[in-house]
Structure formats: structure tokens, C-alpha cells
Length: 186
Image (cartoon, rainbow, N blue to C red):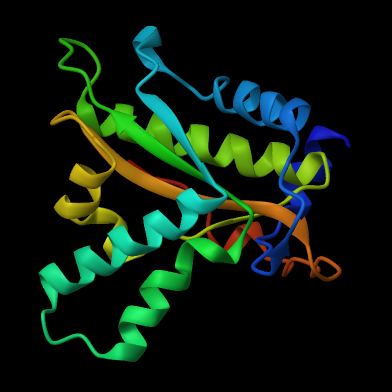
């Protein structure tokens, strides 16, 4: 696939099934992530893969985080949290590792990690793997961070769901760049 085709036509694929990307495909996805803009070459990211029974354990971690923030959460909300990781055969958790650096502010490193996540999504589209970025409020829970073993300088910024699309990809909306671009007049 041409690079511009991937950039112009990538869409989120919310309905995913087996199989998950294979080892060769994963290698490509992570290689694409590592090409993210990275001022200072700090590589302010790392990735955690979650698949198989570990998805159920992640679901239980999300339930615990929900109960910690909303002790009165109902059965429906708990069931939804528990099922979230089961929506795809593979999840890639993108972790921002923020370094103290004299020249590269933490915000720039966080954006670089976000670009690494986007690189995975673009590469997935290019090789025919379905992918969607679904993070949500629970991903930012201190309980989830602790359960994933994140360090004080780390934060979960993306939960990428990957697998085989269950349906034809939708056609992306054609937006007019003029609606988003203006010239600064000084």
C-alpha cells in the first residue's frame, strides 16, 4: 500500500475477530511505531501486548478500577468493563515513558508516544489488519497503572485493539482541509 493511501484512507475498525496479527505483522507494526518523531531520541514509549487469557485478567483489572472510582457501579457497567478487552484478539497498550530532560519537555515526549501509537494504526491499515484506538476513562486510573506495573514516570496513553476486520471497511468522511487551516497574520 502506498504511504499516502494509508494516510488518507485509514479508518478505525471497531469490529474485530481472530486471527490476531502474526509475528511478522507485529514486527512491522512495532517498527512503524519506532519511526515516530522523537526529539532527543529519547524513545519515550514502550508497548505491552495483551492476548489470550490475559485479556480476561485485564478485564478484571478494569472492573477493580471502576469499583475503586465508583463503588456503587451497577452490574451492567461492571460487565461492560470486564468485556472491553475481549473486543479484539490482541491489544497493544502504548505506554509513555517521560524522561526528565533539559531540552525535551514532557508534553513533547507524550506527543511522541502518541505518534508511535498512530504509527501502529497506520501500519495496521497498510497491511490489512483491523485496528481501533479505544482508551477511555478507566485507562487513566492509578489502579490500572499499578496493575500493569507502570513506573512513576510512565502512563498508559493508548489501548490499541487489533485483529481481523469482521466487515468491509467504511469509507472515511471526506473533510475539507480549508475548514481546519488558517493563516496567522502576525
